[in-house]
Image 1 (cartoon, rainbow, N blue to C red):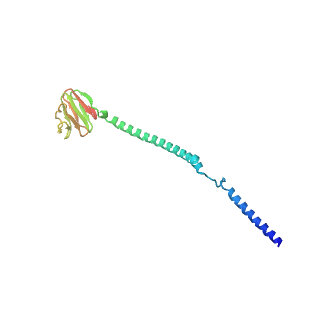
Image 2 (cartoon, helix red, strand yellow):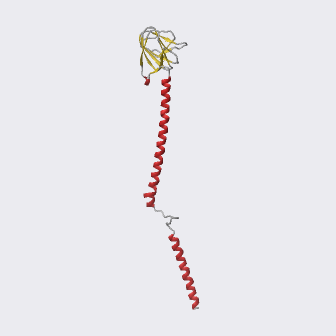
Image 3 (cartoon, rainbow, N blue to C red):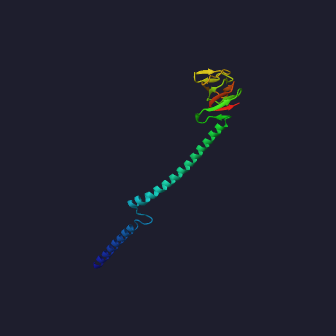
Length: 181
């Protein structure tokens, strides 16, 4: 019986030792390379700021790229508008400003649609193939082709090709696209 007690003690001691070794092995694997232990302070102090820095860098790069593309598109539109304005066969009053045009007797100024004329000195007639020729915005009437303009009245060409022909030397103010013939 004594032998049996010794054998039971030996087996019991072996099982306890085996259990302690298992617990030690399990505890030793926490925080290893394969199963890292991460703390809140590590996340707040190192991991999150590093991630945010990477995100900010990528956002800044994308913003810079998009700004360059937008600038290119805007420059393209500006070039198109400038080309269209300079491509009109004549002059254009920039920024809605009247230009002073002096015509000799017999010369004609022909405007684009929405061009405005203001006769300052001399006598001139409306140039138009069809009605209405020019719209007299001062008194709200239509001026037919061949009819005299009134000094200091503002006239509007509603269709391309409408204009003013000088009967004498004239000074006329023009706003909009026009050509002198």
